[in-house]
Every structure is written in C-alpha cells, then in structure tokens.
Image 1 (tube, rainbow, N blue to C red):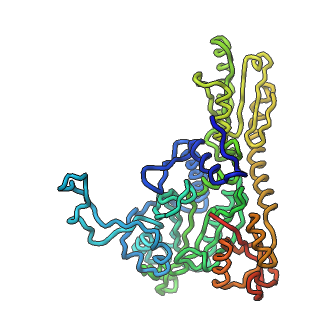
Image 2 (cartoon, one colour):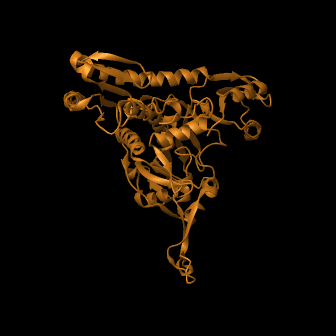
Image 3 (tube, rainbow, N blue to C red):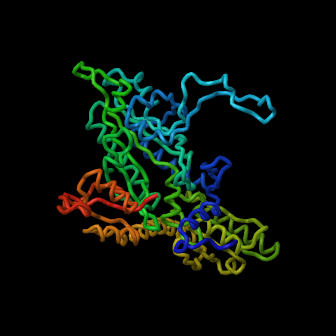
Length: 489
C-alpha cells in the first residue's frame, strides 16, 4: 500500500487521495459527478440517521417533492432566479430516437417539452407552489417539513464531496403565521446543526449571520455555521435561512388569521449536504488516512486475529468471536477481519487508512496471557489490556476518542484566529492562513473590493460578537463589530 501524499506538501492531493483510497467515493463517467462507495455511504447514512432523529425531535416530518421544476416558477422570485441561473440544468426534450444516419441516437426534435424543466438546484419554488394548496387558515400552520434528496448545480470546478454537479442533502422548508415564529425556527435549526457538528462530527463551529452579499438568494437573513479545516481555510458546514414573506408573496400563499384577515405566511429553509463528508476528512484526518469520530464511524472497532497454523487459528478466532459478541451486545459496531488472504500488517494499514477508531489484535501469546493489544486511531497509542478489562476499556476509549478529536480541532481553530487592525495585518493573516477578525464598514463595495484583492470573503458576523467599536481595515470608516474574513472552498 503506497504512502499517501503529505498534508503539508500538497493538501488538495492529500484530500483527494484519502477520499479515493479510503473507499469513500470516486469520480463517475458523468463529469463533475461522483459515485459514493459503500463505506462512504455508510458514514453518510449515520449522519442522516442522527440528523433525522434531531429534526423529528423538534417536530419536523419528512416529505418528498419533484426533481423537476417548471422554469416559470423561477421567474416568480427575482433574486432567487438570479442566484441560481448560472447553475441550472435544463430539460428541453423527453425522448431519443435512432439517428437516421446510423450514428447512435439523437434527441427527437418532435419531443420538445411545452415548458422546459429545471433539474432541482433547491426546492423553494416547487414547495411554496405546493404550500398554496395546503394553507387556508391559521389552523394549518406551522408546516414543518424536511426533504432528503439529491440536487443538481452545474459546477465548473468540482471536488469530491465539496463541490459536485450532483450532491445529496436535506432541505427543510417551513411556513409560519408570524415573523417571530419563523425567525425562532431559523435560529433553532442553526442550533441543531451546530449541536450535530460539535457533538457528532467533532467539528467546532462558529454560529453567525451572512452579510447581504453572501446570503441565500431570496432570503432576508442567512444564518450559518463556519468551520476551519486543517489547511486553515473556512468551510460553510450548514445554513438556515429566514425567507420572510418573499416566497409566500411570489406564490400567493396566504392564510386566514384569527382576526379573520388574509395574511401572507412567513417562511424558512435550511440544509446540510454531503459537503459534511468533506469536512469530516479535512478537519480530522492525518498522513496515514481517515480519522473518524466514533459516533459517525460505520465500524467503531476492528478485531484482527494473529495466528500460525490451523490450531492457533481456531483458538484465536474463537476468542475474537467472543469479544465481538460482547461488544455487539453493547451496541458497538464491530468488524472481525478474519480474512486469511491478507497478513496482519496489511490489515493494520488498511483499517488505519479507513479511520476505524479502535483496533484490537489478538495472537496466541495474548491467549496465554488472557490479554489483547488495543490501539486507538487518533493518537496511535497502543497497549496490552487484560481480558476482563477489555470491554470496559473499549467503551471508555470510544468516549475519549470522540472528545479528543473535538478538542484537537478546537485547539487548532483557536490557535489560528487572529485580530487584524489594518489592511496589511488582514493580508498577512490570510497569507499565513487562518480566520481574521477585522472591522468592516458594512458596505457591499468594501466587501467586494477585499474579495477581489485578497480572494477572501466575509464568512459570517458571529452571533456572539462583542460590540467593539473600531475602523474598517480598508476604508477607515466607523465599524461597531468585527467580522470573520477567510479563504474558503
């Protein structure tokens, strides 16, 4: 098994190689799209299951809406179509036929659609058109719906998980009687995302609000969670949008209030995607491969038997199966790697590459001593544990590894956040890598100028920002608080 590229030498190549070699995903025959392999999909399934439970605990239900959206729907909300127009895939025909010149198949010119269809880049338009039929009275509100789906955004520069033409996600779409309820929903779902990121993904995040220039097309406010990867760039890990009444007005979604008045409803939308898989790789992994937080690992413990000859094999495997059964009873996800086609050293390297949090190795000598060698993936520490302590030690390790991975990422982020009080300092921070806390005068012109000069964006205005008067690093105009500038994906 050849060595991975080093993070310090070529971060992008390191990332791509881990994704491919750890069997997470690979490029597909369709340019810009990916095949998520079983091991990668198993991690995504654990993300789905956890988030789905969290959504349902907050009163949401799942539904499904069409993949195809009439083009006319997009013209109803001007800023929305402007935001997505360049990424839309358009269906114009519905049939192929044999080429009369014998050159394969061609689009049948007689099968042109009466109205062209957009392949779903996001579902606000088709969902709000549907809500018009669902809402008549205040008694029909709130609507708290989530959808698990795929979407298509025609990206020119793609990278597995981070930016692909098609990706998987969930999108919540809710309708409310008042602005206050909708804002509370937007903030609640931001908190759900932050909870998931920190307590399951082991990824520290900063909760904030986007500038008008960076907010979702069609929203009044966009809230986000921002995370730092190991190359010190920012990754937007989730967003929650307060839509106001924009889509309700565009699709004429009204309700009869308690006061017997016709009112437009208030909306939200929120989502995370398979981009979280990219965050998982980039935030925690090392030069030997994946490092998975136990809560999201599809295999939490791998057991590797070591033996010579059939007699040892039978005894060692019997002990391994006992341990597997004991761990399984506790709900721990265990893999017994009893393949006799690979040597133990190969197995060690393979499961290290795949990021399995805990490895147990047992040989004939371990049987004699009633012990086992136990190794943790995050620190690579290994030691012998007596048989009657093994199960409790695995339980303890899984908790400790989860906490340690989070702490390591938190320390790294905190060590790479710097204040910048001048344009030169801002440039210096961004050149070295990290998040820059700097004053901004609040104008789109300044934001765009800095983006053009330094290739950095305002990632967010942190929600817990202290009110700290100062001067904009570019214009010198007054500023009431600092914002986070960073390079991003």
